[in-house]
Length: 221
View 1 (tube, rainbow, N blue to C red):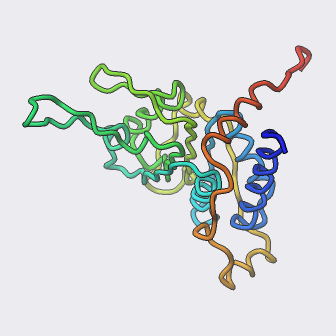
View 2 (cartoon, helix red, strand yellow):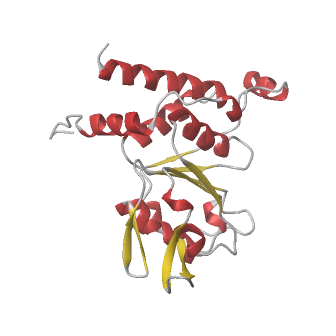
């Protein structure tokens, strides 16, 4: 078996495994994978408790990616995302300690609960796959995929995302409530993201992204 069919089979297995975790949402699972293969970022908008965080965690485990979850709160600072420079007394120099944005899959949970200054810390990372701190540019991990969850704006303590940040997301999805049949499965103790295992790795994800970038697009389209 050649490498391409093997990777394609792994992608189908990943989709099936995610479908067993995020029940009754095959379209959303397929679109989330498509967004990742396109090298974009995903914004999940919905009320709390419908599986947004579960989808992000299951994606990271299924694809074998390094995962970091950041809970966006009103007191979150840009340095909490990017990292800080710490003075090393033994050498007399500052050493940069990387923040959670240096993971391969970053979950920005409830992103619109943080103030705009903190949200702006993600702009360079999402657009250029790098961050600049104290005048030094640091490359991010590859692949680099941001999944952000957003609560409805009518809820107390939320901030509207600026257009400059919305433009960084390739796709906006809503999971919605499960239908009654899958809701019964959840009530009876259905599967959880902890039961997933990696069916791919970062190298295979990069190969799929490279293949997706070579898809021909007609000038008429």
